[in-house]
Length: 266
Image (cartoon, rainbow, N blue to C red; front, top):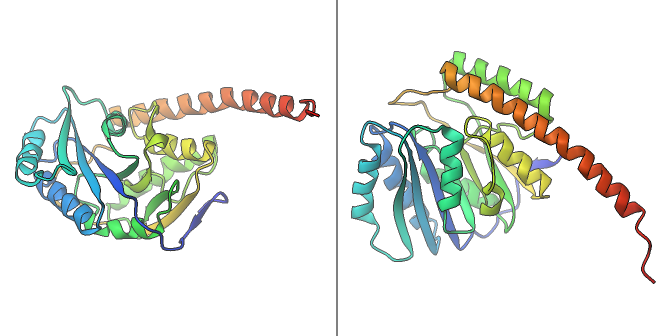
């Protein structure tokens, strides 16, 4: 937990409407079940209007068709629906999230990965900490991934903290609830999108609270985090984001100086 975020928050009243955004790439084995359970979780939470937006990021295994089959069965009420947004080619995790945020119709986004490692039924954990305008960031209470993946993740995001400063306890945890506007206009196409999202929230003065969430082993599909192309993209995006932040800091400092020297209006 960082100095500008805090863990645990007073119980809040859930938002009136929510867009669940699920990025998916070749998740045919689990996607139908994840989407249906996401739909059920939103309905059980009493969200007045909701949608499930699945971004099919260039899948070649029929992931998009599986979601459309579920949508045909479940999306009957006008206040709620399931939709698929398709990338013709695999553009990356960050690109999928950015597309999902852009297509979301509601002011609050529930971000969750579609690989089955998070249980949609845990949505009340996020809702319990929700207040209007707040960013609720989950962190994996016990990460259910192989040791090698955990070590690689810790090494890379240790470097991220050195390069960019503190973010949150588990910046890449894909179980978050936040105002949609924070996710609009991001740039990362790969793994750095979660870091960029948190930094954007901090820059806009959004309150961030952190809550522990369960994490489950992957039962199907193949994670792409160790793919050399994905790793190379992550390093490139890290330095691009660092450079962008360095360019912004002089502008912020200059603006602060100007404000301190503004004449008083009498």
